[in-house]
Image 1 (cartoon, helix red, strand yellow):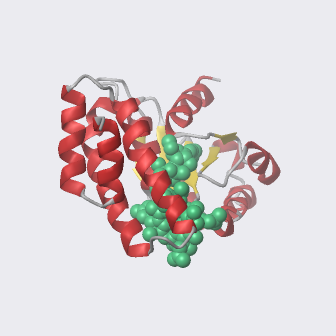
Image 2 (tube, rainbow, N blue to C red; image 1 turned 90 degrees about the vertical axis):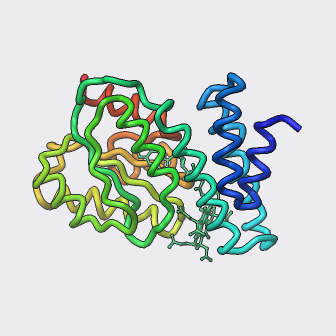
Length: 211
Ligand code: B1M
């Protein structure tokens, strides 16, 4: 079996040390970080996601798979970042209120840092007030809101409203993303930029500051 498939399988079994070791080996074998992330780690997590949906695995299995994914990302992280890039601007990132999924958000953070942004990570379950307060105290240029649940993505509208009501809407670029989020949803709630994945979020952030 190819190493990339072995990584996916080990992730599905929640074998964090094996995932870590195999990510190192895959890099030694000449695969690049993107190939390992997409073909191994994200592939494994997507299979777990499907099984979770069908009630073939449950929260504990998903959590240990998530831990294994994070272990693999740790190995790839230095290679996903361009070294020595100058600070491009300040980003405040968080998973929205009610939502505890943070793997995608953490990837966006890594890619943003790789493009030279200073990233303030508010973690998960972040309220509109917390985003607003942090943008004001840190004088940040961009906020990135992540949501993985159809029930929490709607909270992104509350975040846009909070900035509008405070008169700060024009001072900040509001970026949104996460599996259920779409360009159409972004337009509907009045956010500025939708990105389907972490790499394009980082590119879009650079583009927003340049314009
Ligand atoms: Co959850 N979960 N989960 N879960 N979970 C999903 C999201 C689900 C689709 C599974 C399923 O049913 N197939 C489903 C949501 C259904 C829906 O709303 N449509 C679901 C559910 C229902 C739940 C619970 C309600 C289950 C329960 O308790 N009954 C519960 C909710 C808890 C809560 O948040 N309040 C729950 C809990 C959990 C765990 C804690 C067990 C765990 C999270 C662990 C963690 O994050 N530390 C978990 C996981 C791991 C998943 C799945 C399996 C994987 C998510 C993931 O990390 N994907 C997921 C199924 C799936 O997605 N296939 C599922 C990998 C990650 C790299 O992708 O986050 O999409 P993603 O990020 C992408 C892009 O979306 C984008 O960039 C990344 C790629 O480059 N992106 C952004 C993300 N954020 C962005 C922000 C941006 C830009 C781009 O800003 C600009």
